[in-house]
Image (cartoon, rainbow, N blue to C red; front, side, top):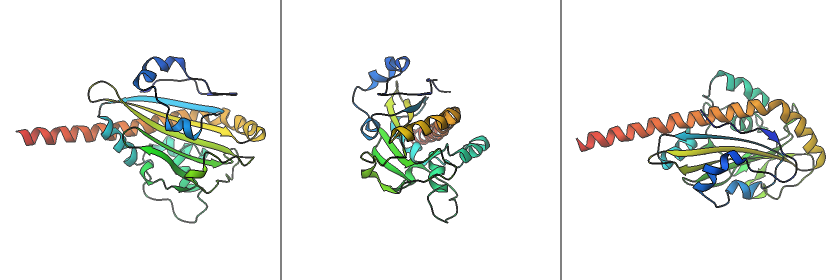
Length: 233
């Protein structure tokens, strides 16, 4: 379903996973928008999936897929604050009911979880700042433009993103990466203890999100192909 990468706590400057470099780095040598938002981090999870749909359709599926419909286990794990979008809805500090559906395309430029950067058909980056190790998470309400410079002690900065690359004819290689960095040594230690508990669940959820995107993109691609076939006939 997806390539497995070691999910680990990284000390100091991040290192690349050599097992993925052979294929992924050849697709593009340019820096990621995610690198700009959070270049140094203490923990990372990466998942990859080849989707049988063109890049543009896969990117559109990422924006529109309903993240409240990822299965009962993911819903249960959401209680551990492992699903970024649902977390943002639950802990926004408002009394509003949870919406019927949530998508990455709904992310605002200001709030708890925000859209940090995006290039249509290439990359989508979002993030948040909060005390994720606490039962009552304190999320920081901030503008997307303030995320990179935020350095108030006692918080974890989370940046996550999708990248999209052509993979052969009519297929797309999608990478979903989630990074976290503590804003000081104390926050780093607290997050490290929390991360050892939730890391496996985060990896599972990233995989489920990629599956949902693949299903949506491939369904749309088949429908488009069928419409084109009927119009030619």
